[in-house]
Length: 323
Ligand code: DP6
Image (cartoon, rainbow, N blue to C red; front, top):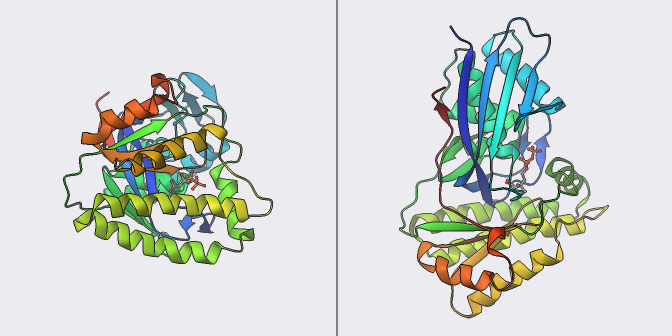
């Protein structure tokens, strides 16, 4: 037995957001969420258990990093697999240079598969999603490809991801507009916690997020792209409204984020079907159909240089790599 394995996981962008935990240790979300896994941005992770190590060693893009979250996560992996050996972990983020889109989602999804497989354990994708969840909530969804739902659940067993069947031929694309690649001001972990504890609107968020999820799944099955995009955009803005209503309040907007949002809304008034979403950072992601991509890129080029625009299509779930 070699005690080594490598895995690749793609990042995902939520269309119905996860923004708040009801259990911070198990990472159980307040509401279910829905995302699209992307083909362009991914993390490759190689794990090797070495009996002579006195602690886990982690390299990111060739540089050694000390990350307490990785240590806690590897302790969980040892607990789950029963293999009590430290590991050398080597991760590479494949994100276009300076895109600022590297995420904990692809990182923990790839690490979950690589670290369990290296320990000689094979888990179902459902089980893997529950393991990935303990590293970072959004990683739960990167275990699967295309459209994915993270069922909130109410304990470790019942909080997992599952694929969402779609019945349309939208041939969807996502254009990531890179506004700023600086590290984010407030981590999602602490931002969402501040919101849960202080936003007077939090209760309405949970209530309407559940309705948004139900309706967006309906739209994916047999509804219009317009309904789908409208729900996604409004859900994202509600999440950002929570941040504005927290105390202390905070936001992820940069001036260029608003330029991007307005450009998308302007295109819509000209009849182009496109919608945006935004996460815990200033970059804006535009959702559209492949057939409208050229027109949309041409418009966006008026405000953003082409090396700040990255087009992605739906991508696959986590998979083992032959090393
Ligand atoms: C805005 O998964 O990064 O991207 O669970 O604390 O690690 P932790 O948070 P994280 O939060 C993601 C927040 C979001 C929305 C989403 O992906 O659903």
